Length: 348
Ligand code: NAD
Image (cartoon, rainbow, N blue to C red; front, side):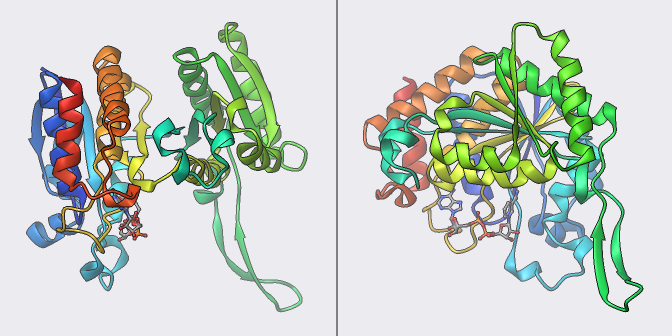
């Protein structure tokens, strides 16, 4: 039976994770769940946001289902002890280099999109973002120019192996969907992007069934709001992916609806909603659990090879929404556990 590390974390994390586990159980997914503290909860228990026991469980597990971390009471701690360091530590220690964020608008929620309903209805895409490189990890610092002015700098760099690795994730993701991949870069200006484009083009020969196109990032930002339906899978670097994935998520509606996966090179992954610990609504039963339930479905699909169970859960979420189930963020009155009930009823 696959071992799943459950890391609920802080704030609404435990509330939404509980619903995802109920749905997985109701769907008959035989999984061995083991739970460990992470974030502020772990800091209070053991003095560290990512204790060795939690990391050890995450290493042994076949996949990790993560809630959220973040606790205002920890905001004055030194940076290495803050809850948010746990997620960065897990990405680093487990070499999770590929971030997958689907953006799909459930038809029933067309009004929640920042776009016109007829444009938003077309959104069904996945952004594959590289997580371990780019300008965030290059040499950086502050210095003084010869003219005596302060200057900040951050070096953007990718080597060809890093690009090839994420490109393959992009092609594989496209193979499992509509076989169309758009690689986003800024090759008209950046050397890093020129290498990116060259390497992605080379890797394309391994995937003759996938139609590859290239797009400059400024155009991609525009096309995402103008005609998002043209995209199937987008692959891009860390910086561009950071921005485009947030943009795409707002096109697709509430933050409480959006799942994500972070994968290593063997397909092991950490699955989490894109939202944080939402301290403003924690403990009130107001959190929308669907992003976490959909993250659990991604886990079945990408790390456990159980696409049919994933399809069933996603269909149950759509059916619950079609039946009118809405938490407060979607304009309704259902509590977190009532939304879980609605999905479980739809599964049946
Ligand atoms: P947030 O995502 O927690 O909340 C933003 C807003 O969205 C809030 O009004 C919140 O109530 C609402 N919201 C979020 N998730 C919701 C859900 N499932 N259902 C209904 N409403 C929901 O972002 P924030 O307020 O900027 O950050 C709060 C804490 O979370 C901070 O400590 C931050 O560092 C942390 N954070 C953690 C992660 C993570 O664990 N990966 C991600 C983002 C933020």
